[in-house]
Image 1 (tube, rainbow, N blue to C red):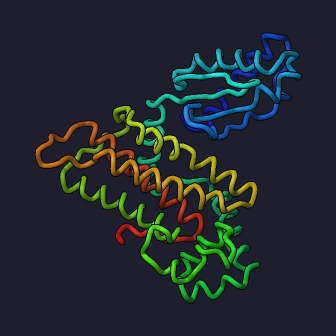
Image 2 (image 1 turned 135 degrees about the vertical axis):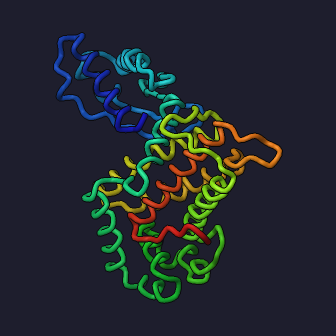
Length: 300
């Protein structure tokens, strides 16, 4: 389940609870979703019960319990817990997360936000470069990719990550090189799978349940909402932060979960499903880099 669909499910749950009280829920605020700050609190957290309890004439904890009961009826939701004064902690079904990854992979180069969102992000990066002449020399010393990624991140020109020697280095500490190299690694995994004749799992891959897989799946599902927030708030740093975090999750995944089996192993549908996840990661990383005006090399 994508964050957008989960927000729709929350809105529907709130409308149902309001209707049961004879209250029109159309005036309720849109539910916002955030990643929990602490592990073990589900995939998403929402404060909608705290924001709407007074409108519905109840206390936040009771409203959260009612909303949780409504959400549990969805096959896309694996679990809903209520914590504190009325926080909703929602765990999305691994099957739906895998389905989302399959949709991203199938979209190919058409994957991404709408044209208006993409343009707003690109313009925000360009305006940051224009307003910071001290960054101009970086383009000559480290290239336009480093310049645009650094400008989007909002890092000061005096910061360690803005040093030309680092931005020219093929090292993990170089932020743009790190994301680009992970994208290239994902492409390399895809090429090796093709050489080994790992079959594409198609639109219905096996549900992926390894913790490294579910962490990466959740991150990929969060890309489009992140892009929307970045565009609406004029904060391209949300894209650079997202890409860095997603790339780190991918590194953990590729070290943990094999796409191409060893010569002594049989190729199974699990390998094909992991290939779908790899392709989804390629699309997300490439799209994120392109939104910033940064290249996404397939080989490095």
